[in-house]
Length: 396
Image 1 (spheres, rainbow, N blue to C red):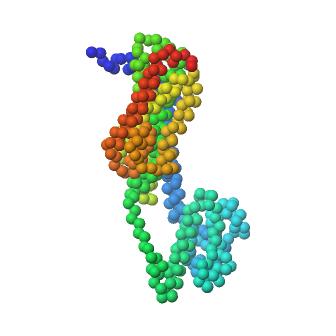
Image 2: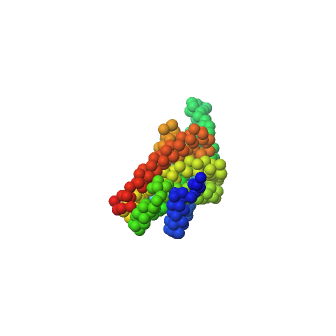
Image 3: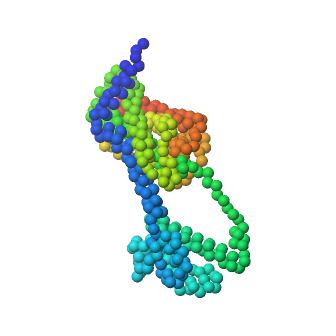
């Protein structure tokens, strides 16, 4: 019995791998730039966000107050809470619009009169809600003013001989069941997108070169007239493309494991880690996507006349992996059976569950893997039909 490794598909597989290893651009995209870009970008952005949150929470709040002399008790309260009260600018509205101030407190002239009468005393906050970077300061000021208002309300009730608890007929207690792992998982919602994108990027250049590239170099026709079944030629090319796609995913997972280790998530109560067992499950879920990406990219590249044309087509294909992840970020949903058998969507759902620290059911994993494998095999059969005709070697 002949060794299956000596078959035509293995020869084609070795040929494609060797040629791709010699191409530094393709090798860099498959094993370096693609796998590392997502983890590095995520680590940098997350570290920046966490660092900014810590800085905003710890740094003293400087608050410009118009009419501070009209509410000395309020000013004393703000100072005791660590707020640095400062004089207002000459033109408060212009200072907010010019981003010289995040928030300005205005105490109207009627404040003292309303305070003495026991009616709600009006305060004004000058803000620009369209500026995201000012929300932290605005929320801090609002929280302090609400705390002061609640404190004064309780004192007024006590002076009138009324139990302050009568003003709160309901006492609502929240029991937060989230864990540091689940809270960190919410921040890792885009992890599936980066991993699936790596599967598509890793084999893209090999898929192009093995079809449109060889057609452009006029070497594909010579390959097809060899006494090797077109099925084995296709199998070798798809196997090589899938191997590079899978290698890209492996590198991406390792990069995420290393990158998440250096993010200071624990300082704000987030557990941003990817355990080795979880990483292996992620690899199991993404592995069929590598084959699916290889087959789909091979099909699309087969209809291109040149390497550049195929590259243009496949660049548009990069949008598809983002769709499930973006939908889940915008509209989180609970998984149902048909979703778990849907390629790309099932990976996004299950990897998000892993990131939250939830256990995965074996049936869910089986549905995801089998559904994606079925789609990959179907795409591979389409590729087989393309390799059976002479039209593949000719310009379409």
